[in-house]
Length: 119
Image 1: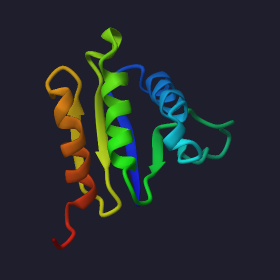
Image 2: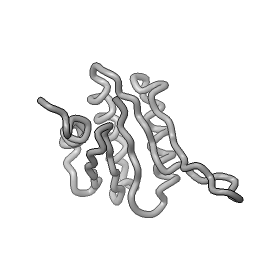
Image 3: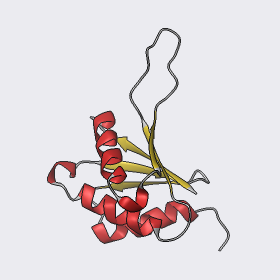
């Protein structure tokens, strides 16, 4: 199971890279995090990453991811960040750092990951 993150607003690429570095530093997420960039168009050298992919697999990785996101979003300079989270079924949720309670992040992640699946 994979989850895809993108950032809304200004400074998207640097913030996405910062989040990727943060998550890669989490031992339980080692080897599960990668940045994706769109394919360059003819004449372009390449572009900055616009998506962060996290392979969740099974077990308690969602809880680890949620805890790490809470810590990253809690940093003062992150108060205006809006994360768009997309699960494998295409369901999307948005996490706005200044509007969501830190304790709600895991619930929102699980909602995005399990939306469209039968109970």
